[in-house]
Image 1: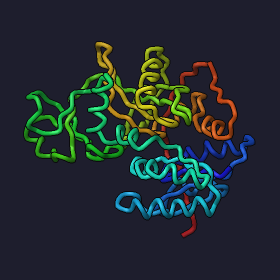
Image 2 (image 1 turned 135 degrees about the vertical axis):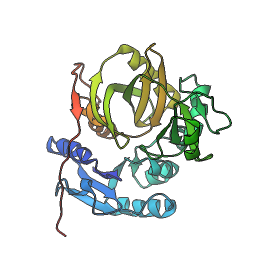
Image 3 (image 1 turned 180 degrees about the horizontal axis):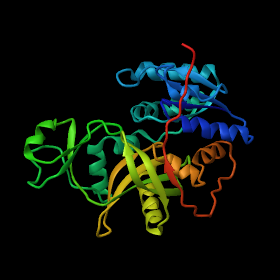
Image 4 (image 1 turned 45 degrees about the horizontal axis):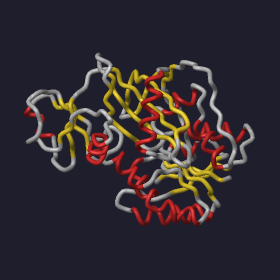
Length: 315
């Protein structure tokens, strides 16, 4: 089977994980795509084939046309997207690609937008009794207390993220583009919720975030609490996503949980899940190949720290 990781960027660990599977006997050929050859994920191994695609933003039709052509040319059977902005585009064309024999691991368009559009997400969470911080979409609505968290309504990573500490800093807020959220003090966690291709819950794993860098988990440790597993099952049944969903939440000093982010894809904290023994990439391949999916019962607490790896190519 030929598999493609789209918009691989600097997620070199995904290439390593796929190579591990290939070397363990999985009959796969690995492809990665991005907008430039100056991409770290392109140069992990000579066993990987690189594909150039246009930027997604502002080029939806061109992106999906070229991606489809590349998939057909290289007989790619499985596409695993890794970037937020391409998810709505791929979700809309998921059925079309399936007719060509290309399976895309992406949720339905409505699910994608109920995650990535934070205004939609806020309404969806309130409707389904998912606890979230109080959120405001206009400076006319906000309370007098600070700090507040400013985020993009549609954004990715930490772009546009800012802590608003007083009224003068509200000048940074752009109505229609940003939202304001009540600041919650507590322990921040990341959760992977893994569903099968029919949107049924399979597994979940939680990590306590120890450090963040550029909107991604930089240091974290795995944690095992039964109450979090029940939460994951609830989220899975409400969103009914496909594959992995990366979820962020905060637990305050009283034990109250507030969900703050939902990303229906593999996120930057997934390596903690992987090194803890829960190989969701292998599980995806097993499901596509109609093999049984099994996860270990052992609870191995792992600490993860991201470092810097160097990749190069001739100029």
